[in-house]
Amino acid sequence: MSAYDPENIFAKILRGEIPSTQVYEDDETLAFMDIMPRVDGHLLVIPKTPCRNVLDASPAQLEAVIRTVQKLAQASKLAFEADGVTIQQFNEAAGGQEVFHLHFHVLPRHEGVAPRA
Ligand code: 5GP
Image (spheres, helix red, strand yellow):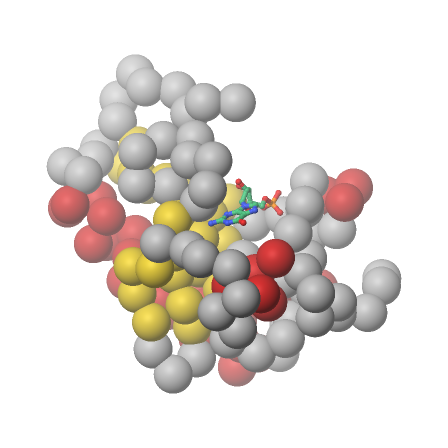
């Protein structure tokens, strides 16, 4: 596994070097809207500290991120009057990861509505 690259796009969002639509922040985590949403309300949750993915994460990073994921999954289910919520997470290129800073996708879902590709 490669080392963490501080020039990845989410690190730049954390440093405020590129814009994002932020929806939640606490001491340890940040959440913002995905730039190419696959459903309305598709958001991403990241730790504020450097971490490539789950394979690389400390228990404290995982705990903080999953706490925020749960909070925002519950909130977005209500806000979007969703029937359910999909939580997705990818590790390394072979595992489908494109941005190499740990993140979880949170997608409010409605019966019979497939996410865009
Ligand atoms: P993954 O690494 O989980 O496969 O995908 C990365 C996700 O980050 C994609 O859903 C993509 O649309 C999103 N993404 C990539 N670049 C940006 C960006 O600059 N801003 C935001 N908000 N999302 C991004």
